[in-house]
Length: 329
Image 1 (cartoon, one colour):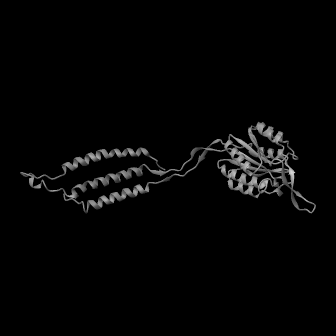
Image 2 (cartoon, one colour):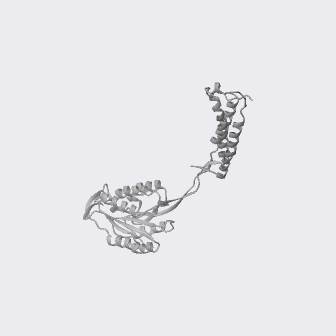
C-alpha cells in the first residue's frame, strides 16, 4: 500500500490556481491585433488544430510540476509493525504410547489412529503455541512449546511404542505437561491427555496433578481411547511372537472424568477412528482465544516512477515547443 512520508507537501497543488489564472490572462492578451473594416471573409475559416494544441504545452507543464510535488511528498511502500487479532491458545498434547495403544479396535491400531488425527489437529491450529508430551511407564517432553508445525507433526509421525518403558503413568504425563505449559503467555492454557488405560505406575498421582493444573488455570481435556467390550490386544506368545488376543477394555473413566471436572475441562470417550476425529474437532472449537499479534513489515521509497514521469513530461514539452508547436514572436 502506498503512503506519503510528507503529505503536507500536497498543499503545493494550490499553486495551480495562480498559475492557471496567469495563463488565462496571458493567453487573452498575447494575441497580436490588426484593425480591419470587416472580418466577414474570415468567419468561415476553421481554427487550425495547432491553435488548440498550444494549450497542451501548459497542461504538460502542470502535470510535470504535479509529479514533482508528489516526489517531494515521498511516496512509500510501507511495511511496519502492525497489530492484529487472531485466535490462539497455549496447548500441550499428552499422548499415551504404552503397549495397549497397539490394540486393533482402531484402524490400523489405537496409536497410529491417534497419531494421524493428532497431526491433522496440530496443522489446523496455526495460531497456537503447542507442545507434545508422551508417556507410558514414564513421561518426557517430546517437543517443547513451539509454533513450528513441521517439528510437531514430524515428531508425532515418528512416535513408536519402543520409545519408553511399558506402563501407564497418567499422573506423570499430566505433571510433565503442566511444567511445559505453565509459563505460557496466552490467556487460555489447556492440555489434551489421551490414554487407553489406568494409572499403574509413576510418581505423581493423577488427581494431584489435576489439582495443580486447576491452581494454575490450566484446563485438561481427557480422552479415553478404546471400544466397548473387548478388543484385540497384542500379547507375546510362548514362541516370542506377537499375537492379538481379545481382551476386555478397561479404562479408568472415573479418574479421567475427575481430572476434567477439577480443571474445568471435559472428558470424552473415543470408541473408533471417527469418534476420535470428532472429539478433536470439538476441542478445536472449544479452545479459541483472541490474541494480539504484531507483524513487522518494511518501508521502501517509491518516488522514482514519479520523478521519471516529471522528467518525461518536461522533455516532451520542450520538444513540442521547439518543433511542431513552435510559435513565431
